[in-house]
Image 1: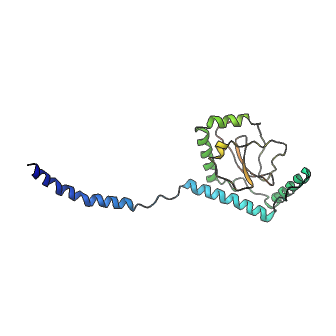
Image 2: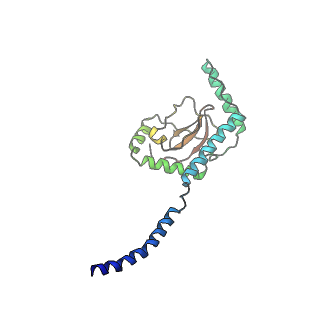
Image 3: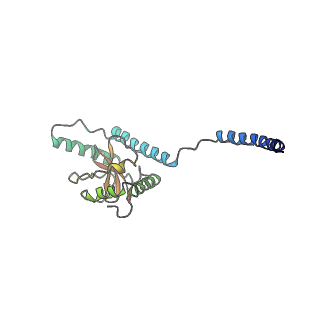
Length: 197
């Protein structure tokens, strides 16, 4: 009796084998998942940041080699900034931080602030000397105002910048600063959720 049952089950199992193989073959042929939209946004942002630096170097030049005199360094920086302002007059906020990129940054910042190191980041931002100013594109970053450092745990979750640009925080805004010209290249209004400081 057991032999008969065994014989009856075997054809049934064998009939499943082609279906099983077909389904496994189908799984192997699944098309790979395309790169996430976030990866595309990061790539677009980094390309825009690099394009700005390339444009600045071609149009306004680079900051000359450091001089011995602090006055000469400040004068060279101001001259570079003025050239950028003239050539980039009328540049709108959001030229680099286009709406989709700005939304990506806001999400990254919110997730980081709500994550494991959120309390430390808030504490770091609260302990820093508060810096508030009316932001405008191409305006000089006040030389007598301390440059508030961006907490490293937050920086780790933001796209890497090309040398010559850096992130700065002013109140709830995230600023993209041209280090050589000491100007605001672009910024994201309300980048930080609520009263994050």
